[in-house]
Length: 66
Image 1 (cartoon, rainbow, N blue to C red):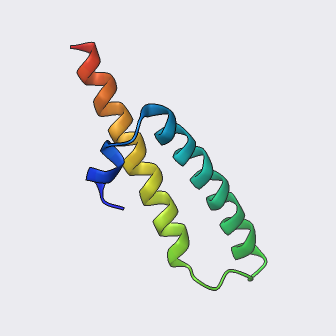
Image 2 (image 1 turned 180 degrees about the vertical axis):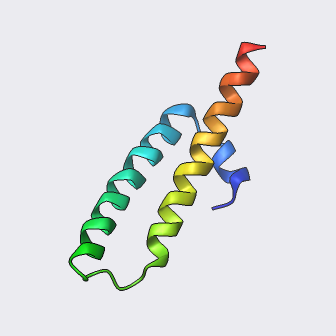
């Protein structure tokens, strides 16, 4: 998804997206440790989704504060 598509989601949806991807990231790290992870790019993708979602939530928070 593009950042534009993430912006259309509600705060609750973004929070759940962050939670889901943190759990995925945790699982990927365990798989990596056990040498079971086949696609290392999944870690990078999960981190990026978390970062984009957090950035959008922060922008909304700062916008409300003004």
